[in-house]
Length: 117
Image 1 (spheres, rainbow, N blue to C red):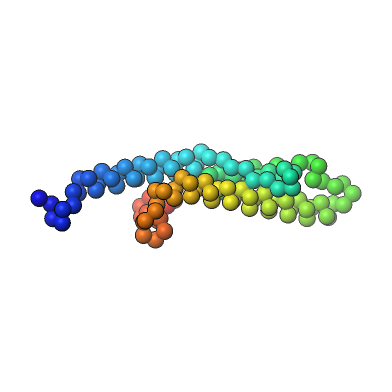
Image 2 (image 1 turned 60 degrees about the vertical axis):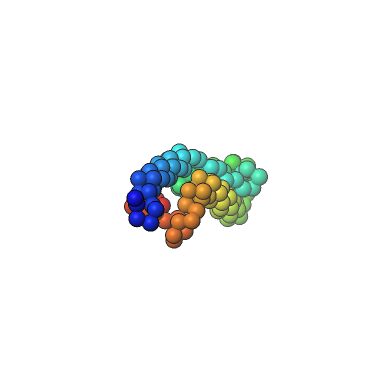
């Protein structure tokens, strides 16, 4: 008979299953790519599922050769907006992949010993 009625083997198996699910979700995020846009698609930013900027594309139509200073500021604003759009998508993706696995964990889902969590 187990003290307190706890089946340690079942608990260990559950913990191992959860760890495997977390590792799989982390791998899915590593492989995922999201794209943020702004200016009606004039600027596109690709981020990894972990939030790293992978690529930035600026459509030549965003450039006004007669006003370099204004164009530079406009492009900077568009890039920032596209990054924020992509970051919001990464956050949604991370919540989709990790949220169900970390619900109810102390400290908002941090798991000691598992990198990135």
